[in-house]
Image (cartoon, one colour):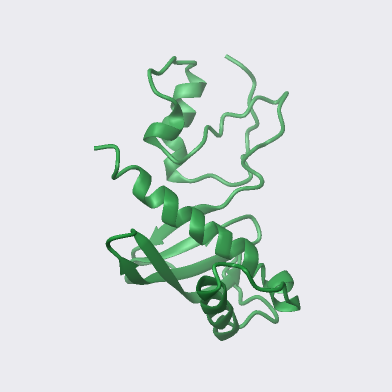
Length: 162
């Protein structure tokens, strides 16, 4: 077996199956992206840690938020959000930010949740086709909007396999 990085930058439960497969060097009949939206965190030392620049989705049942709220998490921030509406025909979800924080759950300076909520409505209404503002840069709202679009796409992928 290869030597691997011992501390991935960012990992999620969806990484378990791909990590086992690559750690034991098992050949699988399907590519990992067919059965998981995770990645192997068994990254050989000879390669860059590909877990560093990613966003994962989490669902908090009780801690630190409650009522099954979702979170987009990267190395710098967390956006806790809910699905505010859903179009069954197009499978399109709209999202409402509930809490925006740094990775340690501290409110991000200059990024009030009301401002993030307003900006997400603007971005969703315009499908992202609006000028970049200082607020977007400071609070990473463009990146968050793209992550939410990606979540909307990957969420349905596994239901469509059946």
